[in-house]
Image 1 (cartoon, rainbow, N blue to C red):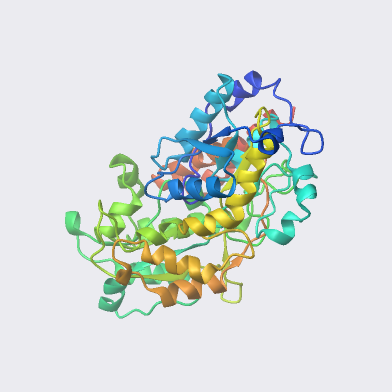
Image 2: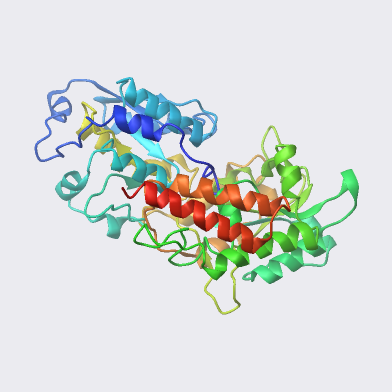
Amino acid sequence: MLNQTIRGLVVTSIIAGLLSGCAGGTGAGTDTAGAAVKSGEKVTLKFHFWYNEDQDNWKNVYKEFEKKYPNIKIESVTAGDNNSIEYLKKLDLAAASSDQIDVMMFSAPQYYSQRAAINMLEPLNSYIAKDGYKVQDEYYIDPSIGDKIYALPAKKATFFVMMNKNQLDEAGLTVPKEWTWDEFLDYSKKLTKGEGANKRYGTYFHTFPLMTQVAQINQMDNYFLYKADGKTLNIDNPLIKRSLDIRRQAEIVDKSATPYSETISQKLNYRPLYFNEKVSMILTGDYMIPEAGGTDKVPANFKTVFAPYPKVNKNDPTTTLSGGDLMSVYAKSKHKEEAYQFVRWYTTEGIQLQAKYIPSWKKADVNKTIDSLIASSKTPDKVDKESLLNVMKNSIPQKFNIPAPYSDEVDKAYVKEVERFLLGEVDADTAIKNASQKVQEVIKNNSK
């Protein structure tokens, strides 16, 4: 998430119809697909995802898994472009075309819940019971939907602020160990420098829907645009208005954040802006740790330090969004037991061997993983471990809630109205009023 939680899925309704006959699996209790392992027959699993295999060490993951399970071979299906939105379209089309799918991964819970709702995912309850553990005890994220579990959590996301240490020093600012949005705005203003084409902004808000809800999305609970019942609007929450006020203060009043008009007209992206030192700090997630020391494409010429996600009030806890990848077994896979074995192994042992992400598995050695993430950066000495550890150890994950299957439609309707505010066409109250009406229509249409 911040990583790849943009915009809705354009083919879900079509695929829902195509997959209407895709019933959920029977589970380990009656499924005989695992007989191949027992008989010694070779099984090839098709693993669908979006990551770049070479960059993220996936081939070593397959190698290590196949050592432990020599009868199972992993064959990946990925564009390798790190674009989880385009991947979802390809995944759904593969399902509609009856292509082989055994294991799949989701970057955000709404994409997971959408496909669980159309019976695309195998319930894992019986497999888990057979292995004798409780997901809630084993993982930081609980992916339950009602009484069913359709995935195991892979990486755990922690969100924070990446900051250019040289520019902080230049402005006489220290690295915050905890801070409020007011303090964040003050830092942004003090870090802004220059004019015109040479202007350096204090911060940048990307086009992710989350960036229009900055004061609400990291609350411990009640952080969606609708309440827990999936029907009652939550846009009248004062933290939505606070979120828009933060954007207005930074982009319009203080002129310390890249204007939204420039972001969309120039198709700007946070990576080159930050590493080319056009902005001093960015709101992002721990998927950026390996890149904090630069990459071959975009080297880092400065040290990055880390601050926790800002909070609304000084006495609030320091929280982080609760997110991460979820790994599922396809309901129509012919090798469900083997697919589950790969999912369970990867989300425990495999993700640690991979050393690219922070595991959601509670028994993982996080300090060791962070060392590996920093070491994998192009220039590890450009990544400040002390401030990073402070963030990782002291950020409290919010309650993990599974969004409604139509969450993307809600986001799209909301953002469309908020964009008018960001472009100066309407005020915040008008944007919230219009967004409330549009989101209510989405909820009504999906409640029939």
